[in-house]
Amino acid sequence: MWKWLHPYAKTERAYALCGSLLPWCWGGALLCLAVGLAWGLAFAPADYQQGDSFRIIYLHVPSAILSMGAYSGMAIAAFIGLVWQIRSADMAVSAIAPVGAVVTFVALFTGAAWGKPMWGTWWVWDARLTSELILLFLYLGVIALYQSFEDKQQGAKAAGILALVGVVNLPIIHYSVEWWNTLHQGATITKFGKPSIAPDMLWPLLISIAGLGLLVAALSLYRLQSEMIRREMHRPWVQAMFKAQEGNHHAF
Amino acid sequence: MHFESWSAFWAMGGYAFYVWLAFGVSGLALALLVAQSFYARRSLRRYWQAEQARQQRIAASRSRQQQNSKLADEVD
Image 1 (cartoon, each protein chain N blue to C red):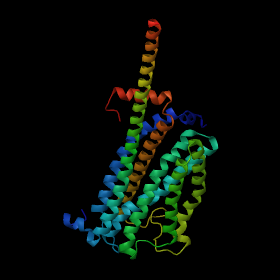
Image 2: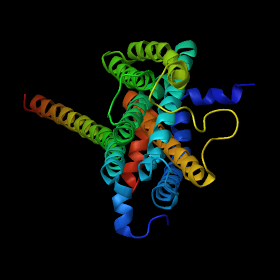
Image 3: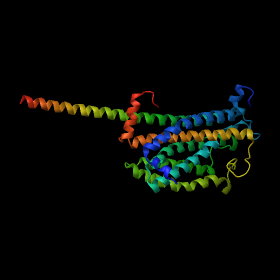
Image 4: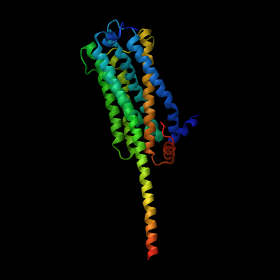
């Protein structure tokens, strides 16, 4: 049943698959982010309580969702790498981690810039904010562990185990606003039932989420390709590819 | 358009500092990540080219050495 997947364990095939997905991811990300953010910033109505400061939502919610989404993807790759010893999955862990870290930083920073005018403080040590900060440290830990081994196979194993242990943080982040008292508001769209937000505000938000998701995918795939080149620099397929690119200079 | 004018848009209903701070820093962080990703790929290619050139130099000097020793043999 899973046989069609097996060729992609080969780095060369996985590289080609990334290459065919990348243009769609870059293009879709650019389009969706431009439409979603412009719509959210200039055309959506202002919030009746928060005025125009609520427009930070169009970066904050997508980056918060994607910080957890990217972590899930990284953890799945780590699991595949550890259980089935598939090298391209190990490389995916190291490719996703920096992207996830930046997205988590964006979620934290936009949250602070939104919290200051609305709550009167940049930061509070409550459950939601603290668990999201721990997510950033988990990403940094995965990057550091992967980098600190000379033998990349060892590094991937250590980083993969940390990534898997850190999964426990994901439900903590999601349910933190229900389990503990917090300044942070509850879920608006990631819950069962009708979202508690007007359609004029919801549509640009959904488009922005799709846009940032595609950007995260594009960056992860691109960095995965780079990692494949780095690890297999002397394999024939990389040699052949670089030689072909020498031929035509405008190669991407 | 929700805003009356461009100046109203930039003012963001009095929240200009926070809104543009959030968008500016986020945009910068993401742009730096994109730039770093492209730069890393380019330096990989540079590294490969340098390696390639080094291999060619080694091969060239090896064949020169062989020729020299051949010449030396002939003189003897």
